[in-house]
Length: 310
Image (cartoon, rainbow, N blue to C red; front, side, top):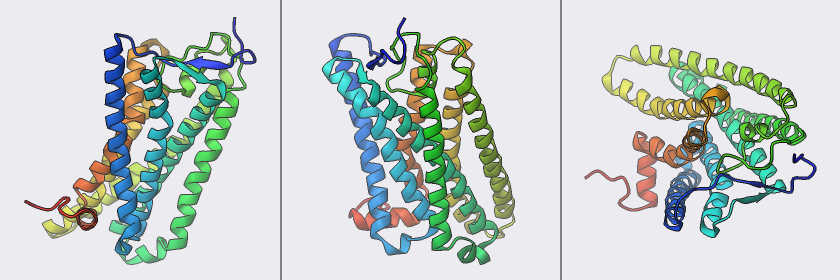
């Protein structure tokens, strides 16, 4: 029986099949990765380049794009390299780094999405106080708090997870290292300590979820009271992309980390992990740019002909 002191590397989930299928997986992941790099890179460049986009909403969106770039860059390159070189290995330190970075980036993203819901609430429900409640210093503090909370939560979970004795081998049934898969390798009762941390984290995330729901209830009530159809359309155009991103992120992440072990399987775990770690970073730029006329106009100036009406 292996233990954590004797494990020097882990084995990630292999992609079975012929060499051609492995190369197909590499090409598919590479296309998604490049699309995420391009989309998020364009959003970061556009917001940084255009001074009229230096507002709280776009400041938080820039942070979100940076987080998405970090998340997808933490998981996909190693998986692509393994497919290309027909190997499964990842070092112990590399696995711990993946767990730490994925938790840090995704926890920070969730806290940032909570902050963004407050930004939308103030913009629509209390527009006259927007500059006062969301000044530049306040925005920096809120973003800094999101990053700090994400870092603290990730450090606690990573340190606790890799302090557990691992008695079930070193094969991780996932294309990257994540806490639920590492816990499957721990001894029968030693994982309970990490489960308590997960419960505490789930309670914190539930509080954020309630805050988001309450914010959007107030937002929709305010939007429905707007007399003009054009005003309602503009308000919905700024809120619906954020709501779509929150829904996609939460539904897949919650299912990945809190689903009952009885329904767990390698194929289901793989699909869910792709949905919460790969799909959001790739589609978030598209979601935000399609319904945001101001961002589309800025992008069209950055790239001539981009998003222009036919």
